[in-house]
Image (cartoon, rainbow, N blue to C red; front, side, top):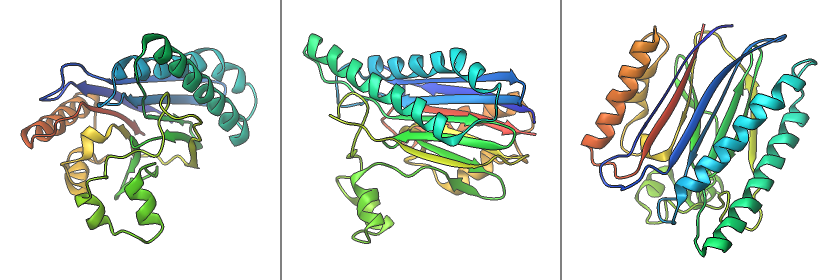
Length: 255
């Protein structure tokens, strides 16, 4: 399996700093080519969110560089990926909390990380950044760790009510600002001729799934130039509609 990968981030129209951090890398292994992407959204209402998001991205990049090559000498196992990624989150949660205590600051970050192999994908999620698979439809692969999503899952709120609720941005946990962090993990089959997207919540608040499909479907994204141009077009559309958060997106197109 081969891939085209892109990553774009924008400070947006109102922030003084970009608190989002992201990385996307490709590896050649004995099990075929793989892509690893990670995207973190530093807490907009907390101080130094960019420090927290950059720290988590750096930790996952270290895993990609040093641990993934060791793992790919044998078939990958879900439990091993889960264990190693959970350990990264636990260590980063403690490290960011300690840094915040030293600086007398509060900081935290969401994280969505995804390893794409020719056969299988692996996703970790904390908070409300998201992973999607775009093929014939736009499919959300992660579940937000938010107050309103929990209420929807419990049948106490509809999606329409959640969109209007004042608590729609309230996270249940984030790395660095929660005493304990329990990531969600998602696993599935990698599909050919598909687009895998990671995005911060600022990328998706004011655009529709129909617009995402229009710009980012695999039939449209035929090369890196189009992927970058269409990502920038959606970022511009977000800004024109007065999205006030930082805006970040990574794309992996399989073929």
